Length: 256
Image 1 (tube, rainbow, N blue to C red):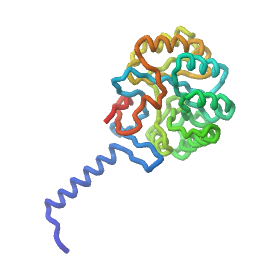
Image 2 (image 1 turned 180 degrees about the horizontal axis):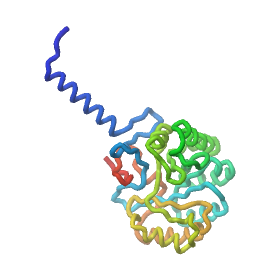
Image 3 (image 1 turned 30 degrees about the vertical axis):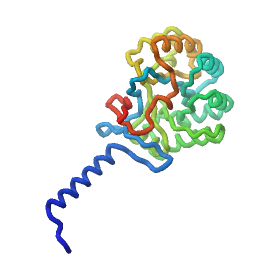
Image 4 (image 1 turned 90 degrees about the horizontal axis):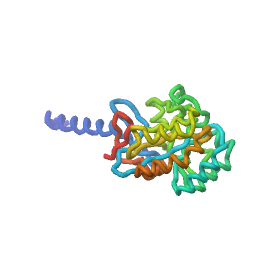
């Protein structure tokens, strides 16, 4: 057998090491799965915001409970000609299928908020995937839409959940601006909390809730005030990068 010189072994070793580093820094999946790089210092991170020079922010609504304000919210969004993202639980989809269809027909993002609104970090990876897949199939059967955006209930996640979502074909989405509408402090509180928030800047993701007591009443002014600051409001799917990105330690998505 021909001997391989020490220098050649070193070259092979360097090539293998470079390949390992490249694979560790970016998870690449087969066709149908997302292509991402969410690992920062050994932690898998969801997307909290996006680094961009464009004055764009995303507005999102979590839908897990009631639907009393759904029509009002949709009418206000139509009035302002903007589109947003609704993250829906399986229970909400099952209980309000006509609302799901109306959201889709109005051109808004349909997002996955898990089947049963559990603390996902407490589940096994197979249970996590089941929570994601069950509502995915419900929405697909109802609307024909294959969702790609996932928001964990309570913002609760761990490394395993981010990887589980990736394997299901999802980008995991958090938020950088919480309207705190779920605390029911009132219309002015919602507006002031968002407009004065230090993270209301290019690439912010704003969290609101469908079914909260004052959200619909605050929405018209909230949209107007955000626009007065020069921001275009877009759905999450139009804000985030789908490939060739990495994250910083705050969960801010940065183009490679």
